[in-house]
Image 1 (cartoon, rainbow, N blue to C red):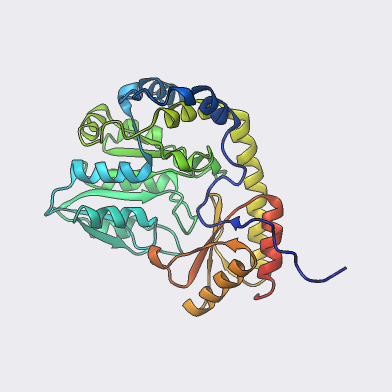
Image 2 (cartoon, rainbow, N blue to C red):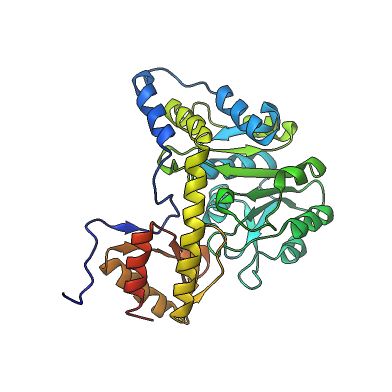
Length: 341
């Protein structure tokens, strides 16, 4: 038998933190059942989906706004709360969407340094001034995969000025198994300036349909709604998201497999001597000594049919991010990385 590693027949895409097992089967059935109605305009308020989300989290429909993904939510949040002479704060190494939307809206974006690859809330507080209106916190942080804990988040909310809106982006919340992950919905009862973002793009497998939502105080939701583009969410995205919420067994299975594979992959990376950060979501942050070493690793994996995410645009030129894939994809990744470890 040849010792050469066989390349996969298809590209293994571990670069965008998608659900490796695809969309919820119930979501796909809903699309099939409704595709003939695409000639009709969608409900601009998506009332049925908003009610279902509200029921899931024991809030009112007035606490919910549905949007065309988190990027749209960032955009309308900035447009709603931040004037041209004001600023927002986020982490230095975090999801690039926060910085991109600040630039598009011509808003000053102040970047707080991480500590041990973790968002440091004290560093964020130190950047706040009288022109700060909005703070974005990805939790777990993308790309480093680390958490801000419930207690730290509560202390932060107790300290920050109540007229500054705090967004906690929980796109990967369904993958979390750490007991210290914040109960943001409980915190929101005490801190009405807290806005929670959630997504259907990750564990629900609907990234291509562009749909997400925010939960906040009704006054905040009302203000955000004034800046939302009408008919920005397709009818198929809405029915797919609604059905996906019902597919609890599928979501549990995806989360369980991810948790198991995440630990295996992390352990293998560390055993190779690679500098991987303990992961909490469905991806792993790997840091090299130099940008050149990082580039070589990305190119090697690409030559083996594996796409991972180089993180220069995120602010980490020496690092890459690897999505936790299906078991067979992860095994092939490990075999390939052993060539350079």
